[in-house]
Image (tube, rainbow, N blue to C red; front, side, top):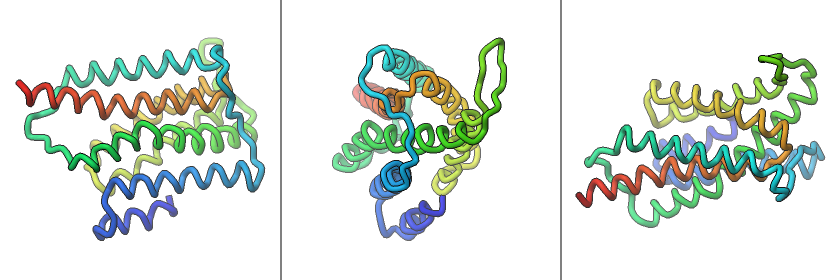
Length: 210
């Protein structure tokens, strides 16, 4: 959060555009996780391309795409929405497709969740299933991380984002505990974020064409 402050200050001072701020901020997240992994040697499971490990992530990613599609149909974008310039739009789509998922999963599921579960040995029993406390705390931390969005959006929208992020953090965390596959987590996260941007964009173009 402290590392984000210079980026937010520069953004509010109009020293950098929003899309650049997003890239810089997430580069900071990746730098934290990768420094702990390679420099401090605090290892966390990354996994590989084993299809048995990736299958739950594929299913989760497709489910989240479907949720985004249903949400767009239920609440289509208004005709008054203004799109950014094409270079900015492309940069934003690349950002949500390839940057957000891997960087946030490296930090929150890879580093933070693994570290917490290594320190907190207790777990919760829910209907015969075990849910580790470290996974729960990491999901809450992931949700609270979205408080930074107060810098550019209303409190109500931010509270909703935090609640959704906590639920998704729990879901991602449980699957990561079982698969130990951060590649799958990154793919599912990227699918969710990209579809959450691209599907409304396609819908907007469709409604505009009508």
